[in-house]
Image (tube, rainbow, N blue to C red; front, side, top):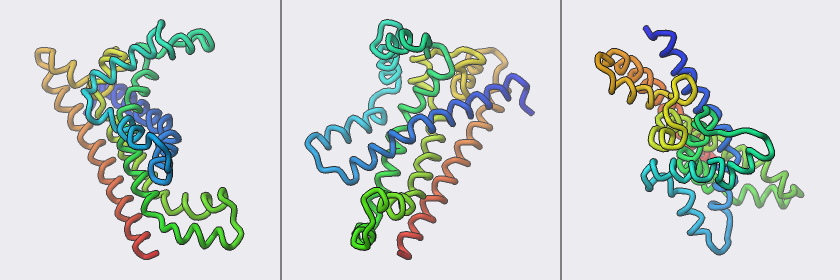
Length: 229
């Protein structure tokens, strides 16, 4: 059984992961749409920038976020002057770090789903008098929705496991930014912390495995649906 403190860590991790997905979902879909359907100069560069968090050390991503959101940083100054808030050492900062790290996986899943939509169906809807927005809402979005959901679930799983960028950006503050990976790392440094590590690691594995299985199930159902079409 988990202790009350450990339950608070689990709930914080779920909140950070959920908010991270909600924050990054609109941008992920927009980027996926651009990369799947767009024809413009610099598309290859944009593709590389989107997937950069997958290949650079997470500590580098966290450091760049720290520079951007620090009180003297370009985004930090704007947040402070307009809203009087700061995301440093706050759970919102942990959600931002998780969103950045989850974004590439979400974009990739959504892009593949958009590319799998049969353009002939869109053309048929257009010939029947549907405008671009109607074609998007009635044909493209419903057919790509399973891939969007799979990408969101996959991003949630990635957010749950985020460590390097988070600890660099907002540190490990118990009750505020200490999510499951950070709590496991902290428990490893304590004598006699093996029991807590075992419990938290077990919960982390179960949550991540459940999210991955859900993403795979959604993706397979989407593939069967497109195959039938």
